[in-house]
Amino acid sequence: MNNDGALSGIKILDLSRLLPGPYCSMILADHGAEVIAVEDRRFMADGLFLNNINRNKQHMTLNLKTKEGMEIFFRLAKEADVVLEGFRPGVVDKLGVGYDAVCKVNPGIIYCSITGFGQNGPFRERVGHDVNYLSFAGVLDLIGEDKRPPSIPGVQIADIAGGGMNAAIGILLALFARQRTGKGQYVDISMTDGMVSLLPAAHFFQQLTGKAPARGNAFLSHRYACYNTYETADGRYLSIGAVENRFWKQLCEHLGAPEYSALQYDEARRREIIDFMRETFKKKTLDEWDRELGDRDICWGRVQNLDEVLHAPLFREREMVLEVKDKAGNDALTIGVPVKLSDTPGSVRTPPDAFGESTPDILQDLGYSKEEIEIFSDKGVI
Image 1 (spheres, helix red, strand yellow):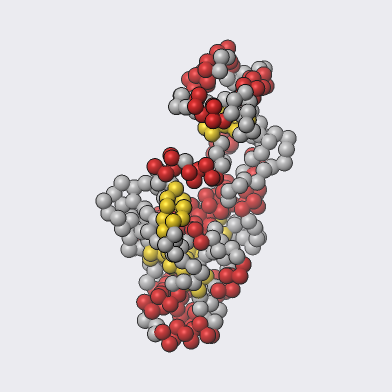
Image 2 (tube, rainbow, N blue to C red):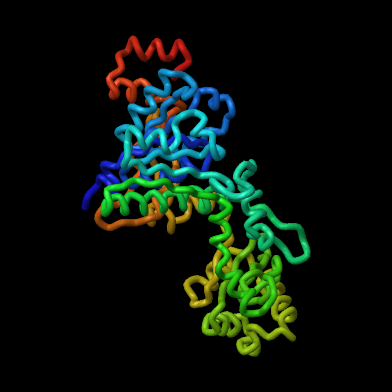
């Protein structure tokens, strides 16, 4: 087993901030890439520094609006394999650190930009956040209860899946292409594009039925009893995902209603079956249903809260929840690495830096003296 990670030897310069870009570089860092996260010190006061996604990275402060800051950036970029940024379109070009500028010192660079709506098109200048990208892509319209307003998810789907994950995929594809061609390239990631890409099932059912899927009333969203959520006696919830009839039949027989087995998608009795399931599941607590349904071939699940997830034996055994040491040497819980590679596994090797913590070390590695670094600090370069 190689403990260095699949991306060992790859150097990434991450100019992004907040969630999408740093999530992307965390994925790459978890798998061995050397990541230097660069952020202007003026952002420190925002209080939006998500330090848990800066694990396995170095974090430095740098003011790209200074001549010295630009010099430091290009010394870093010259040795990098990847530059990642998340500014609005055109900002990096105005700063002088865009793709064309970096290509002049490093022709093989992979340069990835993450934006809300992409580098071209009528929305390129629009500002936005996760909920807006979900909205424009039609995803938010599908989330929530029937005849109720759309519900904003409790996790940032567009930021993470549309931005961070797609950026990681794009960077890996570009690195693979560079191995074959020797050429770097530009990667344009739109979080809204990423959300549209999540619609194949919704699009399929629209083509199949001739009707647009309705919020909270679609084939895979509460319309049928076999794919639904139910309240239990203690005010908790469980989910049923018995799409295939063999699973649905098992559930109906176990609950003493074998007559419903053949009526899984019967429109005339759909409400009757849902009401039966609601009444039935409300008779016992979630823990009681857990013991009763257990490992039966039904496709069911507890609706767990975050605290339960962090302490679930499943995620501890799968190393999706890990205990690591923080900078002070104290035990701390962190989310693990979801992509499991047998030969070159990813890992959580170092805790997150404090804001700008690695700045002196990075500059010393570039050949700057302690005196020069002190001058940079006094002048607001770092």
